Image 1 (spheres, rainbow, N blue to C red):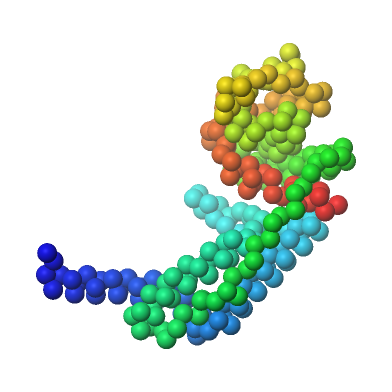
Image 2: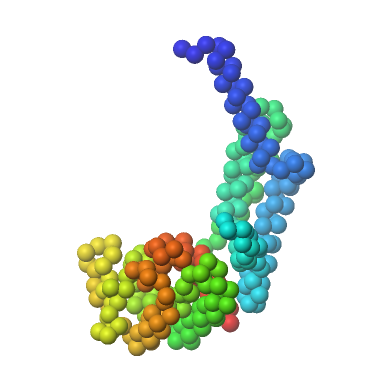
Length: 264
């Protein structure tokens, strides 16, 4: 059994961790603001207003950007991304958990994060359908415009990689591939001369299939292949030549196009 001294030592260590977490979660100068439910309300309202401003700017074609420095000490700009309702609620929940322990240790009198009105009510996003030819044209045109700007800035994500948004979206739309099938697609699976591509990486055996290339997709892939200087086996690869992950596509490729053409 642990001795009384050992238990007391552990308790003191835990208390120190709690105080440290409390200080890190709530920056100096803001502790007063977070001591009341109103502080959480103001945080929630500010994040909602920020998200609205980001969406409005993106819809106007002038997205808000933030500067960042990569591992090579080079400075770049990237589009600012708003916190989702889920992320805002998770932040409040995590702070509430820290504050609850702070209450137990007498750091504050009550937990201001408690209450049904502290969190935002999630809203189900309206589905987006590409059900008309002009929708597809607008989507691909927006992707081509972003590719053009990326080329001028040194490649995708300014890291020298290929610019593939238009070709990638064309493949998704005209070939009907799933995200996993798309990321696993290799050049050996694409037969431009025979006007077909082979899906080898599918969730089921029944999903392994051959897809006939529509003329529009054939032209897009042929043009993309002609400018592809990468030696990667993957059709759509990272700057290092490795397979893309779903986050690469959703976060860095799809989001901008979705916001722009659908608003036009």
